Length: 195
Image (cartoon, rainbow, N blue to C red; front, top):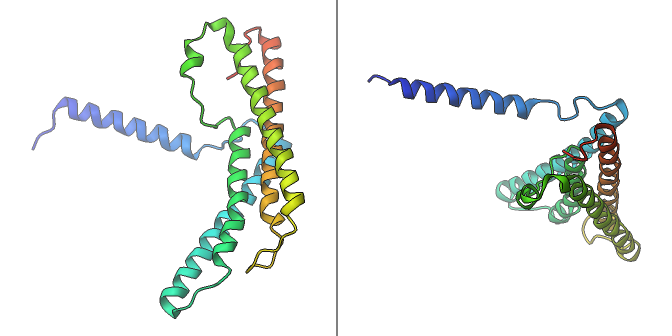
């Protein structure tokens, strides 16, 4: 069987795309950041990894115990539920800090270019306000219900729900930093745009 020139070209393009995707996926997401910023991100990554590892370990141990020993751990589901908010909020915080939050630019791109800077900064301010409000509401929730004890794990529910406070407050601060950075960038470059 012979391959045509088009097949070879297609394979070459596919290999280039694969190489570029691997390079992007394996690149340090914090390249170019200062020590403090890298340190903050590493601590939050460690919290996320710890939460994910505990979830995987508990689910695997519980499933293995159920099928091998015909017995399961009564606290397993509760432990997973208490770890999930920490995993989620670590991901939210890091995605905001690294600028990898999913966003839809359809309407933004349809606006006149002169409006981009204003709309981008308004979006950052709005996100900051929403997350700060979520942090305050979450704090009130933790104050009211955080002392309730988990039935099987025996820990206060605040151990789990406080992740919402820290995650929302951290993401709000990250948006606030991006907001300030957008103003500094626009005054430094004169473009008024935030990437």
